[in-house]
Length: 222
Length: 210
Image 1 (tube, chains in turn purple, red):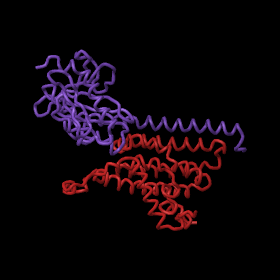
Image 2: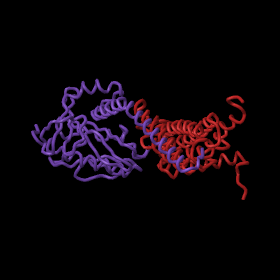
Image 3: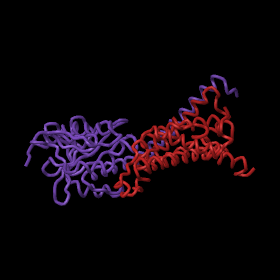
Image 4: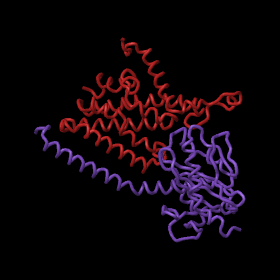
């Protein structure tokens, strides 16, 4: 068999590609259910971390079902609409998770944005006044370890607790500033040194994502 | 010939020092900069690369008498890419946290020069068992450097090791500050250079003459 002939080369390449495709498709299909379960539990863990509850992946589902009383979607006008809040990624619809922690209602909202290398996302929870932050949790796909990736630590997310997103009943969001700097007219927290672009990404993410919730948060305010 | 003859021992142990992929062959420096700002990703990356190099080496070695010469680089790439994808899928299913830690760097194993280097230089000309040992040796040689660099960068850059605070609070109170430069990529290059310096001065035979 001549290994340098064109026919051999083409047949070899075709067979190889087919084989690899079959192997990869099989791997992907057979592992899909495990992966889906991990992803869902990871999401539950993130939602729970935003109300300062830290659980192992295995216990996430039970704890989630225990604490989250209601999950629904709202549109930009603040009206509830039908749909699955947990799986939601539709444009213009925003998931809200209502949790009960020590007898108090917390509103958890989803955040989506972009960092330096890829997407950022997270959850932020507000107290019953729909203004004061109770907790937050941030995740990222590929920010630099030791720099931008520090946004995923509680050392960073805990800085948001107690901050207010409304000033004089006007939506102001929470600014993220370089450590040592400050922001006027709104609450602010320190960013990550050396992770400026990621910090700005979180800043924009909170501003843009919470914008969609403003009507919901201000409507039927008690 | 035993499974660990003297030649095979050399194949396995050589890359750990005298023939280290990073500090002697100068391969895989790019990823050594990217993942070493913390110790933990350095360790996991070292292990992942070891697994992928070892199995890619075995597969290419088994196929070495059938691969058409003109598309051998493509064949190598396909094998590596398929393996990395499988590793990534398996991690996602059974070690989700590790997968999140490594995130994009798993995919970047495909572009790690050590892989192509070892496939071209070793697996195409040697049997599967030798190739497997060569892969393990080179992966570990790469991992050792990553761990050393990650150790110093996390220790001096963040004051922690594997996420635990090791530099006592009292140091900070008397004015010690974490070196922010350590967690930036240039410092990885400098740490690698220092390792090469120390290594060459202990192994005089590696020094170039000119």
